[in-house]
Length: 108
Image 1 (spheres, helix red, strand yellow):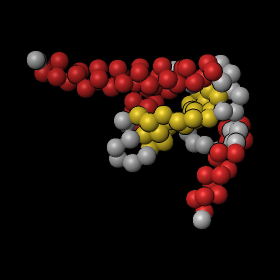
Image 2 (cartoon, helix red, strand yellow):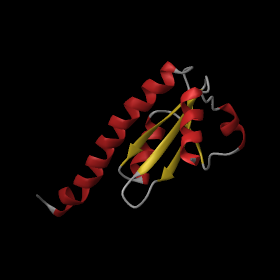
Image 3 (cartoon, one colour):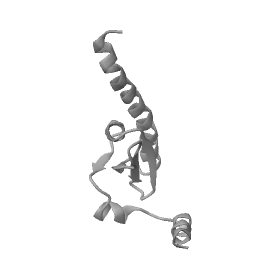
Image 4 (cartoon, helix red, strand yellow):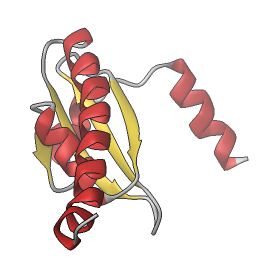
């Protein structure tokens, strides 16, 4: 393998991962109103979380191996990216009994 091929191998792997994650994000958006917004957040040094809010207020998340892969996946899926999870985006999220029960359980 040449030095040029070695340098592009990790980039190709990251792009494949981003495309695979983008398929999931696109499917989520399609099922929840046709569009979605996303926030890409660091989980730690080994992962990134993509929080997705559908047009209908449903939300979910997807974990990516790096911030770059997570951001690229959101871009490939055509999601509207936000820098943080505040204001209007937060108000659109619909929570159900499951989320309220989990939040109450964490406080105990």
